[in-house]
Image (cartoon, rainbow, N blue to C red):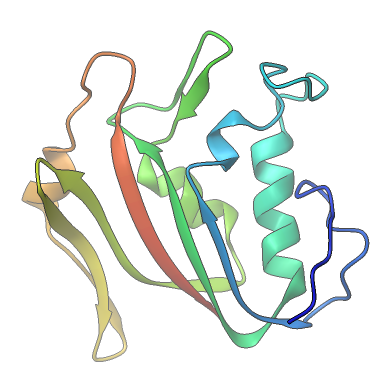
Length: 145
C-alpha cells in the first residue's frame, strides 16, 4: 500500500486515471468554508469532485457521502447540504450506480442503475428530510464511464 498526501481540491500529485477506487465520506461538505484552517473557496467542493473524477480509472468506483436535503445550502461555516441532483450533475463523466440516504437505522434507497437505466423512487426522493440545517447523510456510489 502506498500513501500519498494531496489537497483533495486538486489532487495535483496524482496522475489522471490512476486510481481504481476512491472514498470520500463526510468530508467534502466542509471544504472551502475555512472552519478547519483551509482557505475560503466557495467552489472547493466542486473542485474536489472534479479532481476525484479526473484521477479515477475508467471503471473505477467512487464511494461518497455528504449531507443531503431538499435544497442545497451552506450552514454558516460548518458544512454544506446538497440536493442530490447537484452531486450527480457535477460528476458528469460518471454513472450513478446507487443513491440512498440514512433514515433512522436504515438506508432509504432512492436511485439505482439497473438494466441500463437509472431507476428513481420519486417518493423517496421527495421525502428526503431536512432535519433543520443538518440535512441527512446521503450515500452515493458512482462508476467512471
